[in-house]
Length: 140
Image 1 (cartoon, one colour):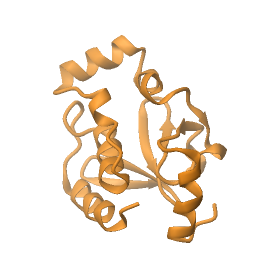
Image 2 (cartoon, helix red, strand yellow):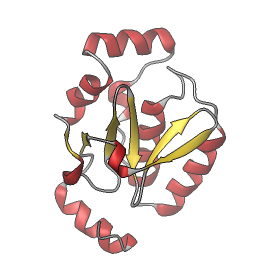
Image 3 (cartoon, helix red, strand yellow):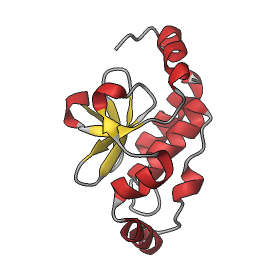
């Protein structure tokens, strides 16, 4: 994990206004994954505005189904780790951090308690998680 790149991204993203279809929860989370973990998932869920976002998500059956289409079925929070994606029903996602879920909201990033999410998606191979825990000193 590139802590410095993720930190810089989170500061910049906090000041950027949220706008559905332009800079929303999907682009916030997937850009954070690209900056912090060098994993580019956004290309798979790309849309270029409100209308195309609505069309894309409606065609997939909703936000959770659109993400599941590319990352597999959602799994319980107990099986997720830092850098994975949390599902916050009815229609929001966030990035799992060591002690909270980072969620884009208006011109800030909310720190949502981990207990608020029911499930989410893995974004990396399982072996990577143990190396990450050692590197950032988090044992969950």
